[in-house]
Image (tube, rainbow, N blue to C red; front, side, top):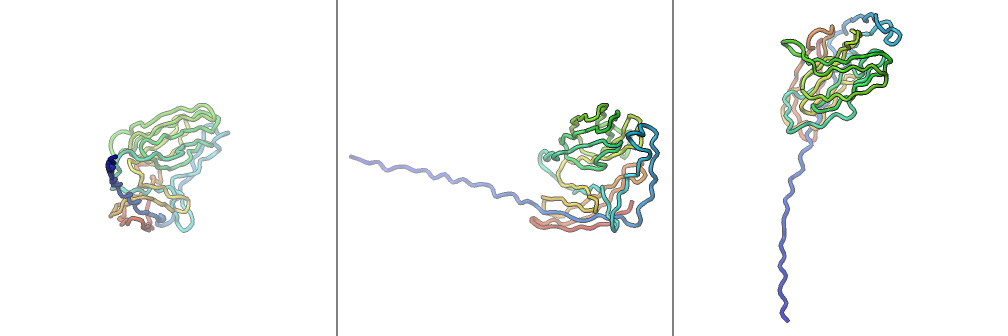
Amino acid sequence: MIRRAGVFSLLLVLLPAPALAGGTIEGTIRLAGPAPSIAARPIAKDASVCGSAAPAESVVVGKAGALANVVVSVSDARFAGTPPPVAGASLDQRACRYLPHVQALTVGTPLAVMNNDAILHNVHGNAVKTEGPALTVFNVALPIKGQKLPVPMTTPGLVKLQCDAGHTWMSAWIYVFDHPYFAVTDAIGAFVIKDVPAGEHVLELWHEPADGQGAGTRTTAKVKVIDGKRARLDLTVRL
């Protein structure tokens, strides 16, 4: 009996090396000098729901000048494909105020626009341009308390919100990015941006206009990011 030798084939699979996670940029943003004095705006409609006056929300300063609601982003960021959506993104209306007042999202994020007031609100989002007329990004009416509508964020850029139902004091801002390298400072002025590609980057800080007019204040700073490391950047801005 003749036995034939078996023939074996060895397949070598070369797996790509895992991508580096990048580095982290963190820091605290503070306001240079005292906070501007901005008077509350009188409320002349739906006072039973909205109250008698609307406190200013454009500049929120905490202990030691900590500045909230600053959008911090890597301005020279490059991201292949579509960035992941921001989980749980929402815009609520309570007591005739937008919550949150400032937020940042990625392109493609579905924004849940809600009304928790028992009155009609009409949320009108306009693209903020340095030149030319404002362009409508979305315009939705919410007449029913508890109503919730999904609004996709389709275009990068800055969006200013207003209420077209007569609540002229209501305002908020949404910054939409085509990359995930951004953050909004919290009540203590802190921010963290994770998974930033290694290299020298330009960090941009945006803050809304204190008086509500114009496109806001921008400040830039350079930062070096190293894979697996945390880069610290504490800055002071003027409004």
